[in-house]
Length: 171
Image (cartoon, rainbow, N blue to C red):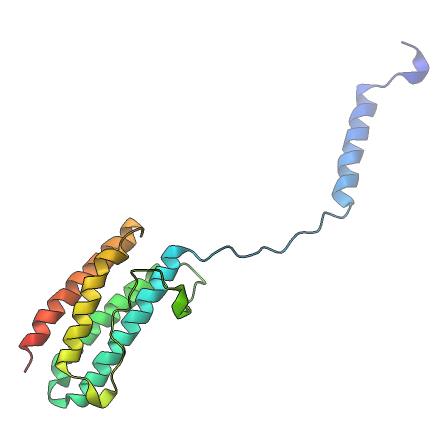
């Protein structure tokens, strides 16, 4: 080896370190803004379930206004629906919110309630129909849901099925 063109390990290491430092100081490539992917199907299902529960609570409140003699008896039913609503909201991912367009509801995610009759027209029969419709929809809503959400949906459906029977006993 001739003395004039010898590359030592130290000089090679120095060049490598300098290269790293220079590359760290150079401008980084432009970061592309993150394009949101399609909404998570479970989040869409949760939003749909929440919207349905909100409709059911509103239906019970309307019934309490139109069936004043039964208002106290209807309150425990409403409270159970409010508990379901809280449990469903608790399963939403952070920042997911609860509002979703109606078209975003996955198939089989029929709302809990029926189309809301006016507050003056809500009857026990309306409540029973809404509860029956909701309980009937629950098994289909568990398909593809996580085990925890499936378990919650099944529990809610069981409660709604019992409501159908219990509402028939209110007079």
